[in-house]
Length: 164
Image 1 (cartoon, helix red, strand yellow):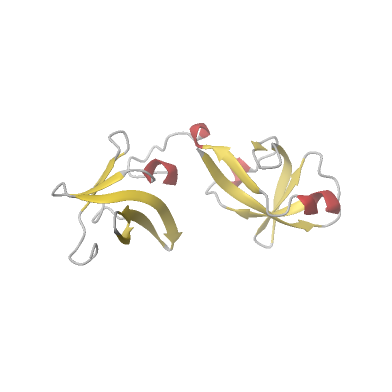
Image 2 (cartoon, one colour; image 1 turned 45 degrees about the vertical axis):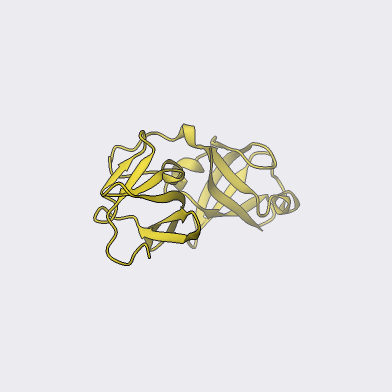
């Protein structure tokens, strides 16, 4: 599975540098010199990066002009999820590990399947339900007491009204 770690924005300057909208918790690792990122335009190798007023600026090998940088605008930068090391924290999960898990209540009643994870201040699981609107479940231990990635399921303990 491909994971988006950034999106190339506008060119910065005249020597091929671009702004990058960061979509990773580890920008210094993902955009380190020598790192290769996949994209719809083929692999791009990072020559260097720096921060300017809170914006990540990246130089890619072979992108030497503003015009070449402009051609990369809106390109998504991705990595393979298989390349991610497992987390040391047993309660930390990558989105791709959660998407596709079956969701059941603590009583064992099927609820649906995780179709997305939203990060809007609080992490929310989007649970697709047959014949019903999607449910949004805050991804906190009190409401999601068990995540069994290997077993393909996630157990929820929703308060009254959360799933109705």
